[in-house]
Length: 233
Image (tube, rainbow, N blue to C red; front, side, top):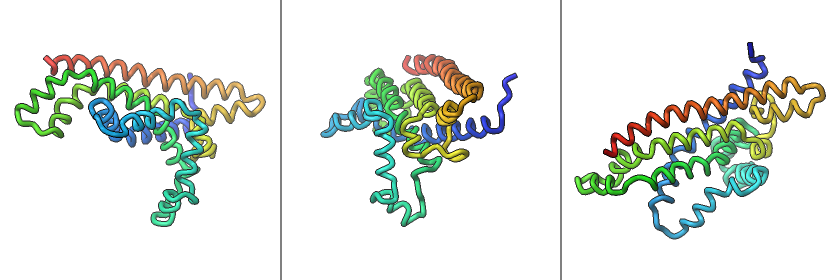
């Protein structure tokens, strides 16, 4: 039986906490940005698209360093947060959540955006002709039809957050019990001679989480897909 040790439970709990906060916190922004890129025609749209996908094309360490510069106490934003609220973001579990959310954000946005682009706009037009305001059309027609893409985006971002390493170790460091998520714990074990067995256990745990999330997402997505087809017809 694969019984987890207290240290593994601690790392697993922190990883799930960081990944959950990362995707839940970035979901509202991800939906709005995806809708803007799918339907919007405005100045700076290309810049927004590049900015969203920057974490994919840039090395994760670069993203982590930029976050560190943005939220350090010497920066305007980081200094203001610390002076006004006593909040020090860098080198905390919140920093790990921010790094994970930023790295998973492009995957979330792309999935939701593609789902919105596939929606038959005649359904939205029909709702508008019946007198529904744009916000209500979005909430009652667009968003429900895009739910499979939203779920897929959430799952991909969650899996990416669980596996985030480069940006996290720069922005949040590798502090036991505070910022040491599964990838950082695995990296730590690999640096210690004779800890191959512990590293394999952490690797298997990481794989099990990722595969489990994808399987659950696929099952739910199929059910949502059937409902969406029923709504469209």
